[in-house]
Amino acid sequence: MKSEALHQLFLESSGICTDTRKITKNCLFFALRGDNFNGNTFTQEALDKGAYKVVIDDLGFHKNTGETILCRNVLEQLQKLATFHRNYLKVPIVALTGSNGKTTTKELINAVLATSFKTTATAGNLNNHIGVPLTLLSMSAETEIGIVEMGANHLKEIAQLCKIALPDYGYITNFGKAHLEGFGSLEGVIKGKTELYAHLQKNNKLIFVNANDPQQVEISKPLSKYTFGDSNQDCYVALKNATGNVIVQYKGADIKSNLVGLYNFHNIAAAIAIGDYFKVSAEKIKEAIEGYIPQNNRSQIIQQNGHTILLDAYNANPTSMMAALENFKQAEGHNKIMILGDMFELGVEAEAEHQAITDYLAEHKFGKAYLVGENFSKTETTATHITKHRDFETFKNALIAEKLDKNTILIKGSRGMALERSLALL
Image (tube, rainbow, N blue to C red; front, top):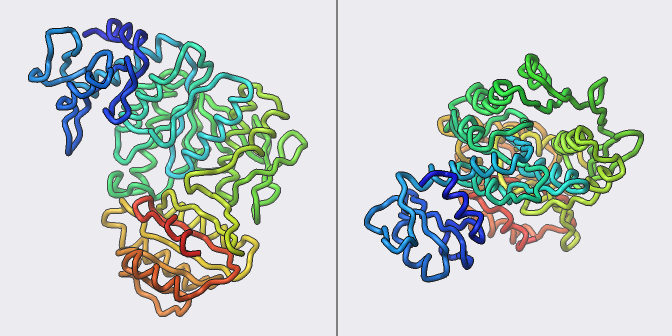
């Protein structure tokens, strides 16, 4: 079926669904395939639950009643439909990627722009080859600006997502040691993330550049850009304080956020700059930044049983882990404790990167450290303020025995470690 005809069916439907557990009446169901499942087998279930049409790519499940739409590849059909819808709406799209801080930055940008525009942004971290199309298809005729987060762990993925979303504006948060298993090296990360720049340059679009990041400045030299930072840039944003909640200065006013860490200054500054570019008033920008409350285990400050806890357990890689530790070292607080979990997707670099974190903790003694996970348990150290635990259960027993009292605690680790479980022990 041609995209135009499918798009008409989409407009007649209640929306897109890819999971029969979340079927809505009159939805357009896409029977996606995965490594361990075949969505085509759920065709009848989707129809029984009220789906309007089911898009399939297996002739064995095709029905002559008109309830199924047979195509060559369901995922490709979803992506083509998303691009058609994006062009149909002609909505300006702001895309962002980077090694760290994508989701927080996306939410801050959305908070700022939503004060003055009808926005649609990526939900959660649905930022891959399925999530990006779903984000585009969640936009409506009322959407004035779309904000699309793009994630990747291999080369060519950002390029593919750009072909689907066709962004008008782009921002790269940073280049860090994330997904080294897929990218191969930091150089590979940079090459992969700057596929966004390549797309924008080819199509004469605009990028937002953090002028305080020399690497970004150098790479973006030939591009059309809007810069921000604490020198003579298009948008002046300066850091005032990062020892507690991050405070920035913009247009003569202090903006106190609910985020901590120097790394979040750059996320906040990007959101301010993008709001500035789209002519959001300084008052509304300040209101949006100060009103944003982090959730989902990202830079959350929690007061619990006398402890001050910085919960940053949504994800971790060597760059974000080191940034969190440097910030925690400088931050205010007493009786500091660090609960750190393994960093995933590092490939052959896993041993060296975990050892580097352990060595840093041994050299800079600013609190007791609990290292949790297979990779951290294999590191070597003689430092007595560092304890290693192969899994969460052994760590759990050690923490309970410690009987901590009124501590300042950092919790940081990859998503698979689920270190937010520590909260129940504190």
